[in-house]
Image (cartoon, rainbow, N blue to C red; front, side):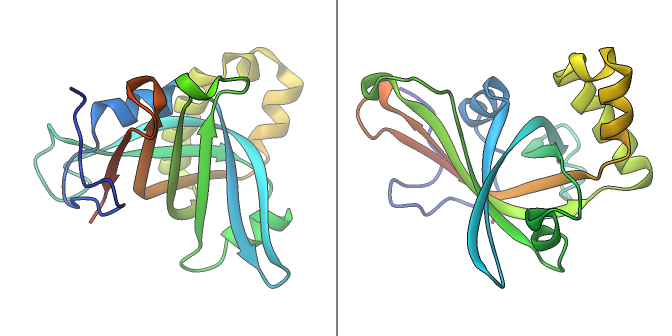
Length: 178
């Protein structure tokens, strides 16, 4: 049986490390659809993302614990979503799934969390993760230069739900930061 964290009704346990099944599912995809709201109302956009992990030390517990995933994406701060996500306390919801799945084997993720633009050493570390996930960026001088001039963002989920119909219709695993 799959590891479950939280309950089927959306109440996560909080304060626990993110389940391996959820981390694997995040790593298996490369595109997420971000949903946000601004003064003009709700909107969504698709972005490529790379995953990193927050260690327990960053969360104030033992360093050996992998606490939660961190998602990195590139977008200009001048876009509608960039302006909305740059605000203090900005939050976004997102989904990630592979296209063309049959309902009986559908897998995907839902999540929500806080966004911020990365700078300095945080940006440098996240940029290495992003380039490792998307080596074609490093392979194209033109693309690499363009993306290096664009904002690199961190989305730190505080709630995640994995849907895996391959384990039974509506099978869910959830995690929350607490």
